[in-house]
Length: 471
View (cartoon, rainbow, N blue to C red):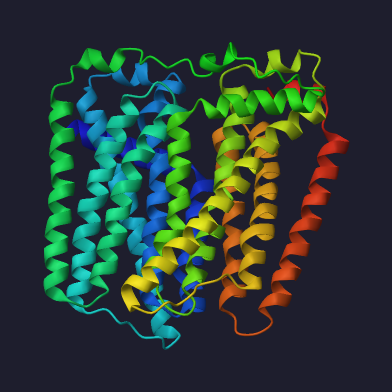
């Protein structure tokens, strides 16, 4: 336990040194804890969004906990100390648990104060607050321990992200389901559901703890084999020969993406998230919650993809060899940026159609009436043109920051800070009472102008010598 405490303090000191991330989390608390409840006037909706955001931020932290050490070549020196591998995993898991509990609690406190100051009131009783706190600790404990364990079994950060996501998202969904049940204000149903879900979390913790107990110290030193993705498609010929450098790079990036099965599964899970949120808030404005979650989630998908695509060239030391090819810089950069945008468009189409189908089916089953849910013009503008423009902006910013900053991870964090600002205008447009169509069009025009300026600036200033210095 003493060794775990040392690892926890080490992680805490490292966390404090990352000033940019502290600013990022503070901005998120302001957005979700203050601005969202101010516009929504609903403590239940705000709490569910706070839980969803906590789980989203916990996932990359868990992925980086052990796989990041292995990728940065610091795991060997850490394991060479007298600290055993089990203490390293438990210390990192405790830190992730404390982060999740503190971040969710800070959001909850801000949401409560904002509702109280805006005279919206609090619809939750004392037993509801207590049950939410107890389940949050149990749920975050299971997510933290399983996530760090899966990260220890991953050969690199990209593999860890895929593995951890498959564990984090299902347990995160359990948390959202529990919140929805607690908000029904039925003590008996809440207790039964809570006990059942806590047993699931406790069982997952025990199963992971048993697996950890069987691991030897030498197991942590083993080089985890990384599957050679992409080779299955290298020998296949589609009969289509790309005629431009842009097409060559785009085709190569897309083929590689299709080999990442775990990542594609994660994208499929994210496509379901807006439909789940829409079902949790039935009513006249049920689709507003889905649009707001899309605005929160969608810019992060292309930002992560482009950070791994461009920043990964720096991490794996492949940027120099890529720049040594006859490929021109502009088509190379634009093709790498186009793949995440293409993925975002596909996800938007699937997610919007699924949300409409699920909300209409759930409306018929719950209310018994054939209430037809349809997107308004304002919602369609925010869902498609605005989300696509936001994704383009995030791709360009993440690509530039991944190259210019010291590490691609710092570039991704900086882009994530900027990406949070896309949520506030969408929330204001959806929940302000007047001129929503006009403000939607204005916001779309502003994003379009920013993208044009950004593309022109990159096209005029990007050069091979600049990139060679960065790589």
